[in-house]
Length: 195
Image (cartoon, rainbow, N blue to C red; front, top):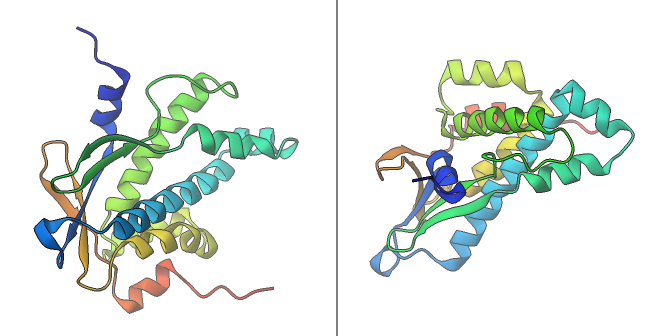
């Protein structure tokens, strides 16, 4: 029996759960769902832009054609591959199980897989951990960190309106996303002076 593409995507997906605290039956507000998913999607697309620019082959190919980056990011759109309404859980993943790039073929498929894994590690890391922060500072400039983390921290509620969890495929909560302290928040969202 072969495994469908959808099942393969479900296996590699990130599962988010929105747990509201002040609604009937823990049903999240539509407004909250839209906000959280929009911010997570922005974070992911900003991450892709930055990682694309860090790849010399992709960067040189896009020098003569500005539309390559847009096409590339569109090709990697997050797909809702599973949904549970009862506890509002949504699993998202880009299509990284088949070659669908007309741009780079095999090279892009490998890059897609490793980049999505990097993204999963980035958003599920401990934002307060010094080692995590050191790794992030080695990889990303101040402006890049701000571009990636601003929408992610917007998705994480700082009030008690809801919690945002990341779960594994069996439904176990792996992490409740929590903003770092104000002091550490400045590391992720530094004030950038305009030139």
